[in-house]
Length: 311
Image 1 (tube, helix red, strand yellow):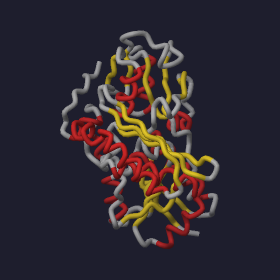
Image 2: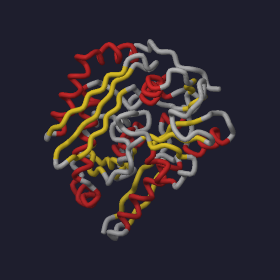
Image 3: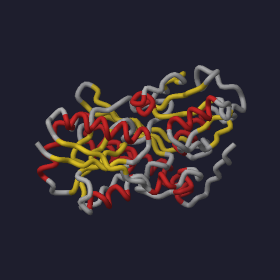
Image 4: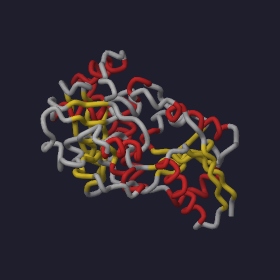
């Protein structure tokens, strides 16, 4: 039996995730406590995430606590964890995955197709904005920050006709009453790692790694490694218009990927099968770059984009 300290952000969803891992570890007879750590991303709440552009904005302070020995492990939404983990850390476990897809939440409309012209849609993600604008260029897209409750309250109050969120967060919190459509990955490709939890520890902490080994899901590690390899090849963080979704099909990896201009004017999609997660992700990334993804991403990284104002 070990005494383990978990570091977590203080949001409702982050705490659900930390408590979930704590319960699993306690079931293995470990003593576990949780330390709440406020990150840069938690402190900046009035600016669209795409405008902040800081890799590790939801992980930096937690990693500092891990390096200092204040905590033994950190529970992250894998999509928030930069693809290049610093050498002093390692991802000890990637857990069983929730539904990785995005969902449309609305009071009055059952699908993206049913939204009226000029409908106001909230999302904090350039990836979602880009794919949505490609489908429905007539929609008005507005940045939407805050925790899940805040976003749903704004929908309920009539600030938006619809909001797009991750299915995983809503499922975990039991807040699915406004979900109207689970959007297929072929229509709106999810973020790399969406729906999975990554558990980070100090590199070489063999004892903690051993305690966490039962949490590691081999198939989820393979699929998310593939997605993150693509994201890494494209040089992207969690707030750029890149989607990646891998799944096992008859024993082989199948990867769907997208790079899109934020205004939806150009959407590049690529899908391929393979056996090596990293090689598959990198090869699909190379193909997207050759097809024009490099120019799209250069425009985004160069801040050559205009985001609408909050309503």
